Amino acid sequence: MLKLSLSYSAVLSALMLSACASVGPDYQRPALDLPVPVQADNPAGTGKPGLLAADLTPWWAQFQDPVLTDLILEAAKYNQDLVLATGRIEEARALAVGATSNRYPTVDATLVGSKVRTSENAGKLGAGANPLSKDFQLGLTASYEVDVWGKLSRADEAAKARLLAQEQNRNVVQMTLFSNLAQSYFALRAADAQLKLAQDTGKTRTENLGLQQKRRAAGAIGELDLHQAEAEAAVAEASVAQAKQNVANLESAIAVLIGRSPAGVAHPVIARGSEISSLYQHLQLPADLSSEVLNRRPDILAAEQALVAANADIGQAKAAYFPSLKLTTGIGYESRVFKDLIDPSSLLWNLGANLVQPVFRAGAIGAVVAGAEARKTQATAQYVQAVQGAFRDVHDALNNAEASAQLYAANQKRVLALKDSQRLAELRYKNGYSSYLEVLNAQRDLAQVESGLIDTQRAHLSAIVSLYKALGGGWNQAVTTQ
Image (tube, rainbow, N blue to C red; front, top):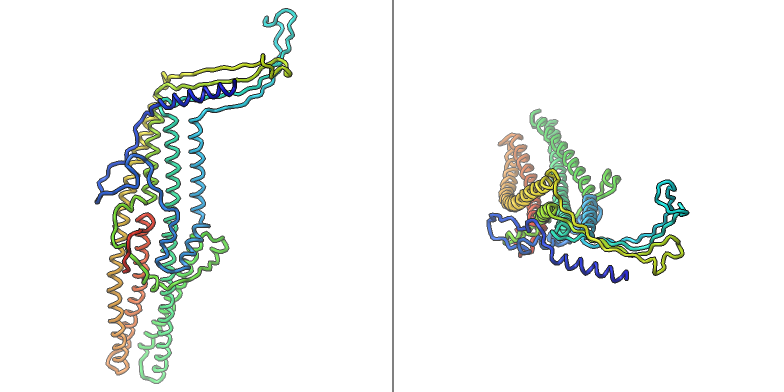
């Protein structure tokens, strides 16, 4: 009989659930004025976007630097921001499971034993009745709230959307981590190149100073030329010290990004791979871009899922205006004597229904609905901002990459011209046609442009990484080497 009662309740609940209609608005993706038509990964209004590829690391293979790839894999495993984001996903998943479970019946097993003494002066006992009594109960109780207005289904929809949002938020963290790590690595290799340039320049300045000291001792030059050489040597020493400082700071920053221990951050040991010039040679840009790739951006997907959840919250809030129906059933045994508890004559069962219609809540339900609608307005604005930001990120990354390419080409021409200028200035000085200041100016200009060339390479690589991030984790189209 227990099995029959529970089966009947389950069938009845299923039939009533099939007839339910969810109140509140169904989700519709906001209409946006995009520069080109965007074909979404999913039909508009479903709220179920395509998943971003979980493994974003292969994109970095284009730089052909195993050290960079190893650092990214280490960060993916140990970075604490990713650990935090993963924990948030697990929390959202637990909440989603809890929301789904509310749509099913609850069944509890009970075993109760009690002993009661009734007052003999209360007039409740018959003549000669024993004031002491015992009662034993064994049974199962089940209850089920019929989701007539879709309150529970809307709650389930919202919880699942928030789970998807947290999953996409983790992808945001991972993509940002990989971008920051790559940019820091490129900056480190650029700083290494700047340090080498500063050391080479310092060596040249020291040699020049030694030569000028000998020439001064021989009376071939005056004190002005000697002091100028001394000043330039000191400037070179300062440049070396500053370059070493930059390298050390970047090493500690990378150590944090890849999740090294506190000791590893305090004394970072970061492997080196390709030179900045070699990394620059492997720089690639997509031959063609379509706005479709923006559908993979995890921040846009997360913002849309937050909007889906906010929309579902409105329906959940509005369902409180309507009556709620709860079904209950129970079956078991009850006896005054424990040994007779499971006797057939001790069997009992019950079926019940509870219908509640809110009548007066002093505006409480309306306030909850208004709050839900306000949160949807906020979520809509955040979604639109995410899309706006995506197009701006792509625009700025492409613009920066183009500008860096032009600067690099111009600086290369300047380097060639200044090398000739330095050679001619040194020749004129040796032959007595110009002062030593002309030589120093030529050396300064060449060192400055060579340093700028390194910075331009780093900036161009950084722009490509920004484009990777702006496009939601790279691109799959054919590429052209710049």
